[in-house]
Length: 78
View 1 (cartoon, rainbow, N blue to C red):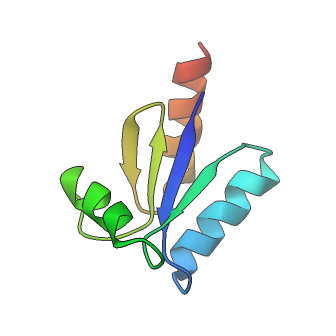
View 2: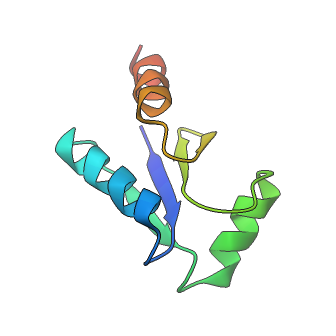
């Protein structure tokens, strides 16, 4: 299972989301849109204008939606 979080350094929702994933011991990769503008282009290509965006095995979830993220992880793990 692959979990990717698109974020920016001073984004409060992004930081809360990353803390949530750490608390649930969910491994994830951070794509920092502040460091690399290409990551922000990936976000807009998914149809979103901002961060955070969490991608669980190809399924994008916009914003701080812990329940949706957990549901997507459960679906992936069967």
